[in-house]
Length: 230
Image 1 (tube, rainbow, N blue to C red):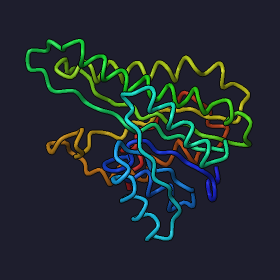
Image 2 (tube, rainbow, N blue to C red):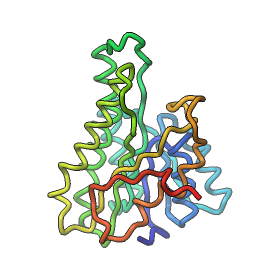
Image 3 (cartoon, one colour):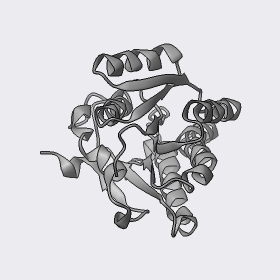
Image 4 (cartoon, rainbow, N blue to C red):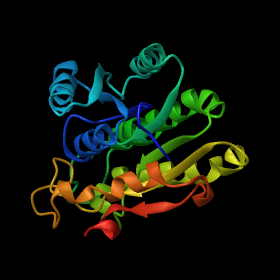
């Protein structure tokens, strides 16, 4: 898919994986809406993109707050004139490591809100207008985490997001929208920690694959960024 001159929203784009995705989309000619929890943090990324001759706009919203999500949706629609072509749901949180594997209910509530409910809300908000476009792409960032009960809230919230994508497939049939999953791998980010094996730069070019693929590739696929490393 050609994304030059088209609008893309990347959540959690002020650092880590989201930062790399935002810059990579801009390098492909997309007009990128850079989201984070802080407008200052988003603006710093916008300045980096514009310095590289790209086009970007800064927005901010706390994804644990449904009212803030609604405001973000309204703001994006105003910026794009209801013509968002790429939605990249990257933002996520990881609650504290629970050594005894007893995960408090608040960990589950916060994890599901940010890691599943917020992405689903953004998908639901933008899907109707995306279906009217010639082509559109939604990418939801998942995780390969397994066998770590100390991080059960994070793991379960990502599993719920995976299920959202799978169960949405019937409504995407015969439309111009592809919705897929992307696993960045275990990276040395604030979320992945310093002991992760891979640098966050390794997420590119793999993270762009579910955006640039052709319509025939279909929806509901898992793309692992580390599979595309040179």
